[in-house]
Length: 247
Image (cartoon, rainbow, N blue to C red):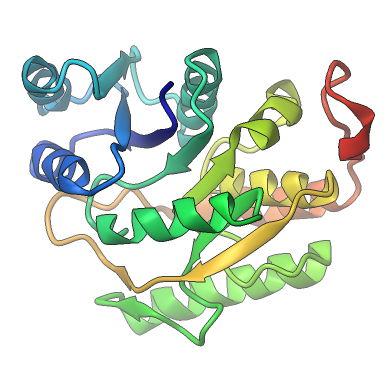
């Protein structure tokens, strides 16, 4: 039975996708990869298809018609992971800002009692390399703002390196998720917390991408800022068909 699925959303990641695929597949433990490509003009999907000939049972691809948002990419992949009965699903960037060697740490945290494990840049001070100081400050205080506004005990609320157990993904009602940019990361963690799941932070060192182009923008932060205010006043409920003990 498949157990560990790494989700990698891609848009113009031709410089990184083959390298990170090979590094992940070289790790012990048999991780699988699902790439979700939003019609990358640089041919990222074609590189993945070529790699699938080499790794037909471990590498999978969902192609979408265009840039539809990070959140919808992950939700599409979460549903695929549930349908294919993966027990642990891990979000990860393609650009090596998340070290593949940390994947077993996130997986083991969930295997050892956590329902969600976060690769955290801020649970042991600030562990970020190669970011301009302004971006570090913005990211750090964004997480502080979220933590205080939503009253959740998570130091890295905007982290994109996260492992979810299957039961968490089966419980969250994806139809109620409103934020589709990087605010999606905040909303997912907050929802899991409000539903009573155990969340662990695993310290990592985040290294800014060396190749390819960053997808960050001021609009991303704007969505997250206003979305958090709306999230504060929203009632969070589990899917109606899951067992009531989760609430």
